[in-house]
Length: 612
Ligand code: ARG
Image 1 (cartoon, rainbow, N blue to C red):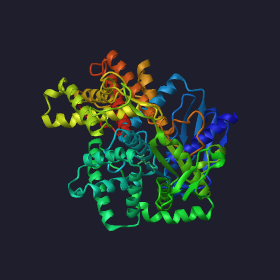
Image 2 (image 1 turned 135 degrees about the horizontal axis):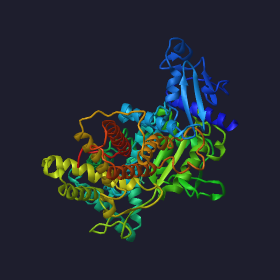
Image 3 (image 1 turned 60 degrees about the vertical axis):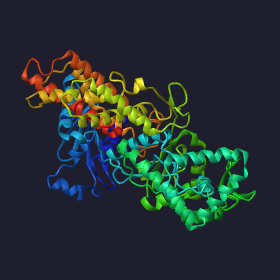
Image 4 (image 1 turned 30 degrees about the vertical axis):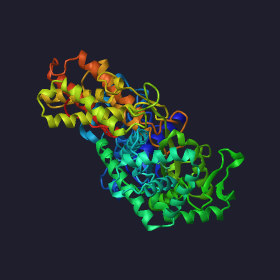
């Protein structure tokens, strides 16, 4: 009995937040009702400090409003119990007595919810009042947008969309690599080669950068030259700054073209250079707290037992580091947005670095930054105002043959891969019936939606930590677990609905077949799948651990739902169903499946074309 009471309490607390109610002192009284018709447990909800849509909760009830019903609507439907709202403030729970009938009733109820909520279905207000900063994409200036930054862009964007859907305030920040010694190298090259910065292309920039490294192998003193140029940049030399800016503008233009192709827009692009004048302050703070010491001229940070190993904060010539800029970035984000979490979507090759960064930040601002998951046991993170630093380190992107390489054997250009995907998608489209009835222009748009969707899905469908094998056969595969497959099932739903003249209707008395019930159950768990992504209610427990920041859970969910629907479609007539009632119901089911696929794809940053 204790267990059930605890469970009910948790459910109501969650639903309270999900319903967008606010304030302290939520009172939940759980009793065993005297009369059986009131269920096994009765929860009575009150709270005179709670508000709902700006109105005091208790006053709302006296005015005949139904805030408790709102809470009840946010309780997920379960197989172990049924529940009902009894005005004004009761929610009655019926345990283990959910007969087959009751269960299908609940599932049908949920189906109606989908028809009503449409693109909002699955969303929630649980993140209300909480802010998340997501640091993602973050390519480096003066290099082309490589395939390595694609993963960060895609996963970061999916996390961004998911947290928004859950009601959090989300800020995407593209931490461009636009500052650092590498600019010394570029500027050195531009100066000694006397190049015209207004005529440079990104390919040339990349070439002279690679060339510098080759030259420096035989002439190590060149590195000192490069450092001198970077120092000039940091010291504010106006001519050097002009060259730097030209390189930056050039790169941004190229990046924008790629973001456009990917259909991605990131809220902020401060970039490392933004922190140029904010680093001395941090350096002082670090010295003040005795967190850095001088070693061979440089300022370093050491960690207990040298694990992780020490890291340079300020170089011996006084120039700054990626590390110092990241500390300044954290401070800026804390002041600017007061976030509850900062999520870093960066390659797994920086795992050690983020350990060093987080450790240092926690030492520097102990009262502002959450320590670690272990010490979080028993803390309700929603009540904890310290920010959580989270590192989501993605694995490498590899081609089936091993490492990614281009014709030239250098780093692969993302744009080439994306264009190839679009070309391959066009082949599929050209072979379809649809291609006969659409214009060339529509074909092009569709090819882009399918090709880009395929690349994104291929990346998202596996756990972020694993390496992604890039195999064209699987990326663009209309039958397997792929983006085009899901888009195809969506268009299938669409086409059925387009042919029907009946209304979508859910009749509570409908007798459900086994497949129908399975589809309904799956539709019902959509919200649960997404809510797994929340990170700030209780410390992540073991079962959820690793899944919290993993969009692949949503991919798997959508794939299974699509397969289930395809089975259904193959076995049961929809447009030619026996009775009108059956037809209406099956159409409603078809609509709901399409809607949920679309909602899921949208979260993944993938478009759902109307037909293909
Ligand atoms: N520009 C960096 C790179 O390409 C990634 C930046 C990640 N974000 C950060 N705050 N360090 O390696």
